[in-house]
Every structure is written in structure tokens, then in C-alpha cells.
Amino acid sequence: MRIGIIGAGISGLTLGAALHRSGIDVQVYEEHAQIRSGGAGITLAPNGLAVLDALGIGADFRALQLQQAPLQGGIRNPQGDWLTRISPEITHASLALDRTTLHSLLLVGLPSSRVHTSAAAVGVDASTGAVTFADGREECFDVVVGADGIRSAVRATCFDDPGMTYAGYNTWRAITEGVPLDAGFETWGTRARFGAVPLHDGRTYWFAVTSAPEAQPGTQALHQLHATFAQWHDPIPKLLRATPEHSVQYLPIHELAKPLASYHSDKVVLVGDAAHAMTPNLGQGACQGLEDAAVLARLLRAGSTDFSAYDTHRRRRSQQVARQSRLIGRALHTGGDRVTAARNWILKHVPDAVINRQVQAVTAWAVPEM
Ligand SMILES: Cc1cc2nc3c(=O)[nH]c(=O)nc-3n(C[C@H](O)[C@H](O)[C@H](O)COP(=O)(O)OP(=O)(O)OC[C@H]3O[C@@H](n4cnc5c(N)ncnc54)[C@H](O)[C@@H]3O)c2cc1C
Image (cartoon, rainbow, N blue to C red; front, top):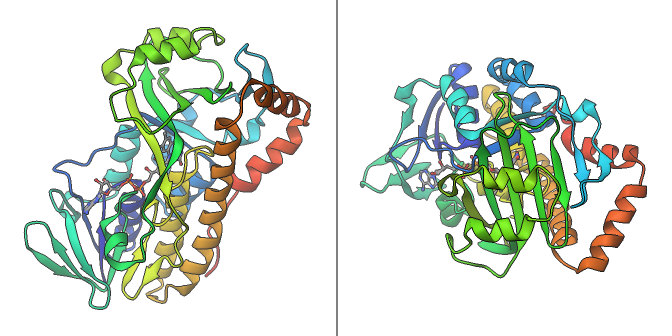
């Protein structure tokens, strides 16, 4: 069986490494001249790490996890009071790392002869498995996997593509040196929040999210973040001051305008953001792409190209996570100070165990028997 994966992001590289490990002929195509990560840091929740273990490529990630100080975590208000604590069972089982490291570790599992850069797919024929590239070349596969991200050309070509919609908020992300943390946190204010997590190497990954009409990339300068978060608890202003402007990445948040009716069409299957681009409020986008890769790898390793079970299982799970993430975004990014005060009061008085059960319901996952 010959498999073509379009897109060398987290989902495509993971699936590629898993299939290659099983001796399957897999080729990965990336439109850029280099494999790029972008987006500063990322947290892999227990479900994401479980996938890497199940695929036999988790050892390097577990080694990093051993270097990481036990992560404490929870939600705070802008004054710094803890509103809820996430159980160490969940935080210790997660891994925060920079995206460059994540990409490098995934690439270890794939020989360079299997990864083709400067190869933008511009057309896919779902019935024949033929892929046309921007340079005019055509390649034929038994299965084509669309792992080409939020603005997927594979989705646009072979599926009823609903397009993207703006979520109503923007993010800024960076990794900062010299401001070590002893706990991760996410702090909820009024239509603004700030999260930070220590990395295994002592640096700090942080993100800020604020509600806004859709702006053009680059128009939201760092000094505006300083103003928004100046009165928030330590070390938020310190982290912002310690971060050079050029290392901050700005991104307006979009998600799929409507859930897809199917993740497969003839010889084509979608994984990751191409299938279910979601808001980042649960930190689950990449983890869901990893779950997709695990389920698809299990089928392909068994020699099956009947993707109906993949479709049913993965749409149910990933679209439910996307829905929850969207609802959290709405709760955090609409309403004024009174809504914030009420929301934070409720959060403070709901037992931590209740919140932790919710988090665990999302992050505990095992590759299903298909
Ligand atoms: C602010 C923010 C924070 C986040 N934090 C987390 C987190 O903590 N944990 C988590 O699990 N998720 C998180 N996510 C989500 C996560 O970043 C994405 O879900 C994940 O990167 C998607 O991976 P992917 O491989 O599916 O797509 P991508 O990472 O978008 O990769 C797609 C690849 O395909 C290539 N490509 C595109 N078009 C073509 C083409 N036509 N031909 C060939 N190649 C092509 C692209 O260049 C790219 O390399 C976050 C997202 C945001 C925005």
C-alpha cells in the first residue's frame, strides 16, 4: 500500500512516523521549503502522549517529561487567587515543550527521503488517489491523507468545505527566558486571559488572549498587551517585559465554520486541523490530530482502507471536543466585569474534583479497537 500524506505538521509527521515504523510505503509532502513549526510552545495532554506511546514513538517525549519539574496548575483571577487547581494526576502526565522540539522529535521517526519539501498539493482526485503539485508533477496513491491544516487544500478540493469563521479573539504567544515558573496557570479576567507554563529547560511558554474585532496580523503591538495586563498578578507583567517584541507571535483565532459531515471521501482521509480546526481553549487541537493519527495508523497497519469506522469514531470525539472548546471561548470572551465576577465566584466554589473530572473526561483516551 502506498500512502501520500499532504502536510508535515504535527498530525502528518506523527502519522508518517507511525506508518514508516510499520514498514508501510509512506511519503509526506510539505508546501514550505523547510519543515516549520511556528506558534512558540504547546502542551501535550495525557491523551496526546498516550498516542505517541501507542505508536511506538513516545520514548523521546517521556525522556523530556522526566526532565520537567512536576507541573502544578490551575486557574487564577487577575489578583492571583487560585480559583481552581488541576489535579497533579493530570498536570504531571502532560508535557509542555516548544514546538520546534516537538517537530524535531517527530522528524526523527521519518527518513528524509520520505519527506518532500517545496511540494504544495494543489489538486486531489479522490476516486483515483492522484495528487497534483504546484510544480505540475502528479503522484498516485492508494490512500491520500489530508493533514494540511486549518486552510486545507485537500478539504477544499474533495469535501464540502464550510470554510473558516473568526472566533472573536486574538492570541499572542512566546517563549521567554529568565522568568522561571514553579507552577503553570491560566488567569481569567474580563474578555482577556493569560496563561503560562514552565518548559522542561527552565524557559516559560506564555499566551495571552483578548477579545477584539478581527484585526490585521501585526496591528496589535506588544505595548497594548502591557497595558491590558499591567495590573495583573505576578509574574505576568514581568514576563511581558522580559519578552522581546520580535519573539511574540500574533494570531487571530479561527475555527471550522461548521463541523464536516465526513472525514473521508473515496481514497482521501482528513486528519488534524484539516478535519476539525478548533479554538485552542482546551489545548486539544494537536492532541486530537494525534488521536486521528493513532486510529488511522491502526487501520492502515491492518491493511484496511475501509474508513467508515475511522470516520464515525473520530468525528464523534473530535467534534465534541471542538464544541466544548467553543463554549469555553464564548464564556470567557463575552460579557463584562459582572459576568467575570459571577463566573469566577462560581469557579472558586465548585469543588476542584468536579472541574478535574471534566478535564479528565477530555484528556483520558486510549486507542480504540477498530
Ligand atoms: C494559540 C494556540 C494554542 C494552541 N495550543 C495547543 C496546545 O497547547 N495543545 C494542543 O494539543 N493544541 C494546541 N493548539 C492547536 C494546534 O496548534 C493545532 O491543532 C495543530 O498544530 C494542528 O496540527 P496539524 O498537523 O493538523 O496542522 P498544521 O500544524 O497546520 O500543519 C499543516 C501542515 O501542512 C502544510 N500545508 C498546508 N497546505 C499544504 C499543501 N497544500 N500542500 C502541502 N503542505 C501543505 C503546512 O505548511 C503545515 O506544515 C493551539 C492552537 C493555537 C492557535
